[in-house]
Image (cartoon, rainbow, N blue to C red; front, side, top):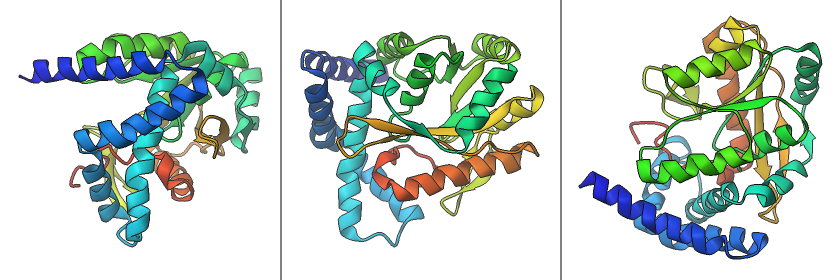
Length: 286
């Protein structure tokens, strides 16, 4: 039964994506945002999840703000989805994004020194903008990704994000081996770490314990790589971005370093609540 449900879900989403791709870039991004906000989100139960997460970590939010986020969060998710399927047109927008923040100097220095970099990011704005922009600037940028639970959707999703740039490393034994070789060669690795991680460590996120992977800090310590948080914030026009490179996390221990990453992401989310993916089960008791 689960397999049938996954197949139907894939057909539905693939059809939406296919129709959207027939439209000019700006129009398709706006329409896909609207479709996910008004059709996919209610059917998938996203508002319930968003409300549960917000009630858990931001109970002081006004009712009107919660209602706004229940619409704005799926809208951003829809825009992100179709952008990732838009190939060269998306890369063009990403490459034009201005890059700022204290960590960019550290990133450039690591490149000139041939030192590996672990770029940690999250489901904020559009998480693949930074990768596309850095590849366009000549950085040796790879990324670790987690295979989606829906195998039908995963097949074309991976193909789509691969067109943005390679190498891509699938989470697992083979991918980890390839990833380590990339790091040892002085490459840059991007990793999303704002998901519930089985076997992770309880760290603070929005004042609540959230099971968090320590992998980025562990890799940085093991291979003497710079650990730098990076995020792409969507602009008010809904199409363009600016890339924020937060300060390099000093080497200490994995928990302290990862908590610093959580703190930096939380601060950014608090300033841009609608741009984080509040649909995830980041706190498993929500």
